[in-house]
Length: 122
Image 1 (cartoon, helix red, strand yellow):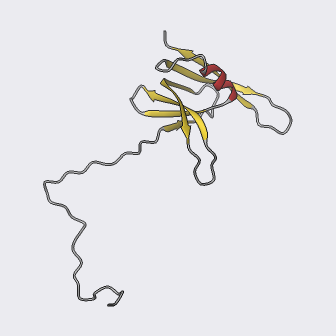
Image 2 (cartoon, rainbow, N blue to C red):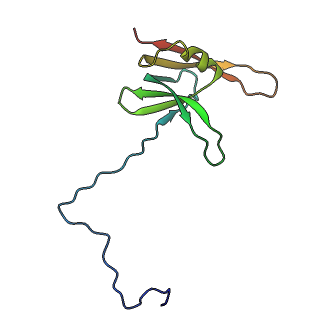
């Protein structure tokens, strides 16, 4: 018995489907990560709690805030010391508006820490 493919075999066409078949795109279930890079940036979403992200390849495990946007899509916001303190006061299921308000200077050699306000829907 040989390990080589049979040269006389015909390869079936696997690139077409019956006409009655319909396909829909498989969408990633990963949330869109919100990045606050300009002072004044805002995000509005329904708070779903803290999401634990398992370690992969070169990244260690971490946590981030999970949200559902007004559009029904999933979003995530990275934790920071400021946001962590503020979000502890927000109950799961609450609609929030997060605004990047400025930078807090840090010790020499460190990047400034981002400052935020968190508002809840009345």
